[in-house]
Length: 484
Ligand code: NDP
Image 1 (cartoon, rainbow, N blue to C red):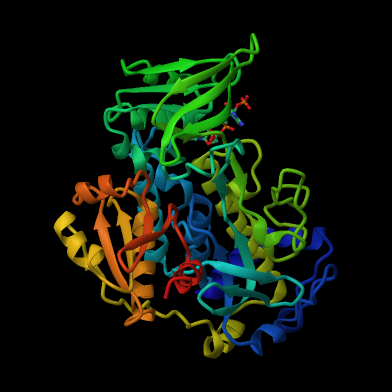
Image 2: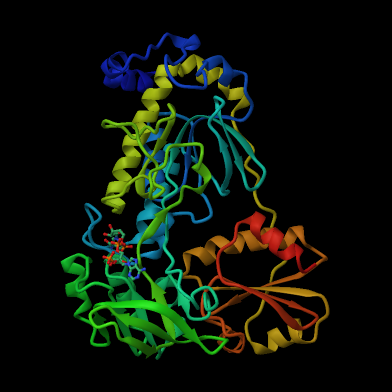
């Protein structure tokens, strides 16, 4: 079956292979250009080998997984610290082909189920480093796994941009956030602003409107760049308005929480202080390419540069990129999915060229990557109300770590298993408790939780640290070690 599919890819791309000066001579094949040497024997004699590794699990990574697995290539998806990517933070998507309206998280769920059905494997871990100077390429993960990949598709997506203005960091999680779908319920009855003029700003404002007293979208130019259909939908909310030519200068607060935002009126230079309780950022994204600096060619904005021509290959043969990590212009889920498909087809062609066939696949079986460890869950107490909180925290000695979550918050769902695994690692050294922000509203209010996930650490009954974001297992371990 493998050879049938690989033969298909060979037929499909055969002319290209010869056209680009590469040659395929079976097991001993090496590429004519580029470093390192792509000797199939190196893969056969390596440990923990995977023919196709996909880094990232948004629409680009998942569609690459569907095509890789369907091509009968052993495909491993390393999900990363934000499984499902940015789509998990959107609500209804009306431009996903074939669906009148579908929730972003549902697109991701369906794509993952399809990839798994076809045989793709998923690793709940994040990549810590990559080495493209040797082949098979080496990937090290945060949970200590080492994987040797014969081909890689990078689909690490992009992360929301920050304003970099005074007050933004100080009040991050205490009124400043970038996830409306996660944090809107903390702003019930409040006045809030969304910064930005694109589709994200339009969507965030509509996610907020049902909860807040009023949401104002602050656009720095004289028009929004959001799709006209999105702007039309915004008009359906009576408590949503848009103001133009206003540039954020500073997030204002009382030391504890956001109380306003200072704006520059770009038309007359006037400075305006607007009293509000929440600032939601929707000012675009930066590509997640930190891992690849000095390993791959990146452009000035940090996007991965692809080989010229109709290919998803980077300048390192065997390493491909797809989706928001390489796409400057379109940045749509559908386009990301399409580029993931192209990347998987390109990777399949590459694997054929270097000599992966049934015989090699059979030889690889002994040393293929199997090191998937299920996280051991430790004891995590549930705090349901103030009474539970007082008995667990206020009168206790030692370290207590609370993880505030909401079941509609994708980052929280990703954080909980990491938290549970850490509870096992620190058993006897700290008490771990989780708090459903919708259930223990009195605790949420007392501790001023305005963003989930939120970790709060108490030592001998005193609050010693608050952290308002998702953490990888490694980051969480380093964080907790400060207090035990
Ligand atoms: P965009 O780049 O489209 O828009 C960013 C907005 O933020 C622009 O209005 C920009 O203003 C503004 N901005 C940037 N920096 C600042 C700053 N420092 N202060 C104030 N404003 C600032 O990003 P989006 O995240 O909105 O969208 C990214 C992609 O994702 C798009 O392709 C979009 O179509 C897609 N998307 C699709 C959705 C859907 O279909 N459901 C939902 C969300 C996103 P300026 O114009 O002046 O630079």
